[in-house]
Image (cartoon, rainbow, N blue to C red; front, top):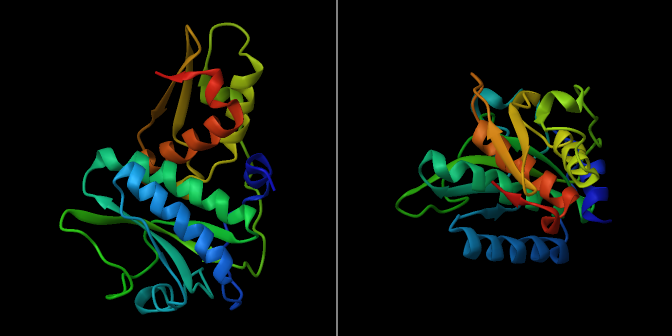
Length: 224
């Protein structure tokens, strides 16, 4: 499965089977996490076979079920880190999809379980990503016209449109899609997060930028 195949196949999944993640697949994910943490300064961690985060307290009868594995998207405190969380978290989401696993970004409906992961002095948990074998494969939400999400003088080039099509398939908090892309002179692309009462727009921006980059090709443009 290619990265583009993964973008097309990925949907948010909230119900999971108890099948454990095989050692070979977890090793692949851990290697990716180690590389990401070294590159980004984040403190992403993979938690395996921990059933309490999504089955305790007020969320016991919530919409998630069977979650026993998840990525902890931790890193330095501060708003400027949130885009990194989205960008590198989506890299892990799509890698998991290529391994035959399902995922779902989670902002609030989970509980932090003591001992399941560790934080550095200035770290915070920005969100988590549920992971495992889905009891279902999820579904695509209705999408608005792509033209509502970008600005461009004249007819946009094909690489830009491919990037936008992939960005439209990116998961965002409550499917809010609060982002805009602007194509500027010299093949420079500006990506902006818009205001939302739901929050998480900077995380969302990192996610959609990863999708855009994957489909448009890094060689086609520079970020403004």
